[in-house]
Amino acid sequence: MRLAHSRAVADPLIVLDSCGSTNAELRARLAGERLGHLAALVTDSQTAGRGRLDRTWTTPAGSALAVSVLLRDLPADVDAWGWLPLAAGVAMTDAVAAQLSAHDVGFKWPNDVLVGGRKICGILAEVTPDGVIMGSGVNTAMTVDELPVPTATSFAALGASADIDRLLSDYLTGLRDLVAELTRVGPVASGLHAAAERRCLSLGRDVEVTMPHGETLHGRAVRLHDDGCLVVEADGAERAVASGDVVHARLA
Image 1 (cartoon, rainbow, N blue to C red):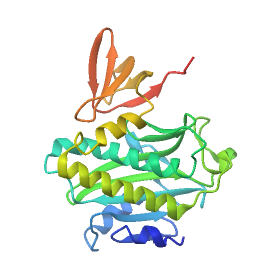
Image 2: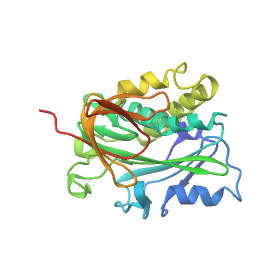
Image 3: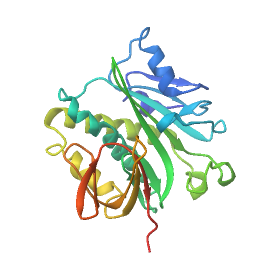
């Protein structure tokens, strides 16, 4: 992969022909390599990708872009770190939308990027002693037959050819700027709160949220709390959800 524009943003950019998990590989390199804020490790052949709840998957070589980014310059207030996955969701939504402008692009809370209601990218944040690693996988050249589930999509399935360098550099630049402003003035003054609400497809929808401890909440997602939680109105009361798997109800 020739990624000249991305190399100008990352510190540094590490490109691998193949690896198991980009998050695990980047984390393993923290002890022995100089990795600055916005260090990024990428491959188009990830053989042991990992998502929420330790789900794993493999994608055909060359069909998806896997990237993990190290964030070191973080808000002093750890409570603001809950906005980091949302910042990644906004940045990736904008990067995808820049090349798929004819489609409806947004993210499902907290950070699955959807195109036309189908998932094109998932994002996973991991906290380490050296910073936060933000891992993401974007379906690029994956054919319709290669899509893992009927609710997934890809650039190729949408009849588009992804410009990988542009996609990655747009994502890195957007993530860099959003995190910098979040660190400087917080989620509201930085505009991140408003930007996330504009792009969050969950808001105004009936949702089913499965919590980490197994409880299921049914209600309508109404807004994002100041800490980034999803506020769900259920049985006449509002409830802030910090984490969980969200399923959108079908629109009538």
